[in-house]
Image (cartoon, rainbow, N blue to C red; front, side, top):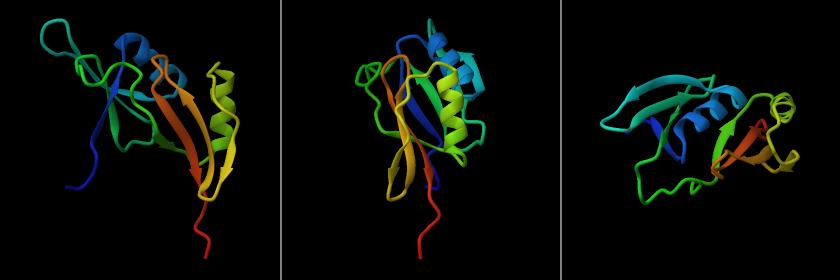
Length: 123
């Protein structure tokens, strides 16, 4: 095993969630394809690449809003935090931690995210 390729994010409305992740967070659409009757495969990726997410509605064990603690890394948290606030996202104030700065927010379904900027290692 070499990496986590895709993370499933449970949502109630794929279109609404896709608009949030692309318009507010700046993710890009990797795939948006039909998947069987009445289902879609919606896969998105942060602008910097890496692990992508898929917006899922079909896992009964993952109700919308049940994901928590997923971390998005940024190189400029102050700029990103300001931009997200300007887009109307309810995001916490920046907090300082031993590993760097972070803020938390929820997507429209209540899935919890952490935006963080890791500090350079202290020697």
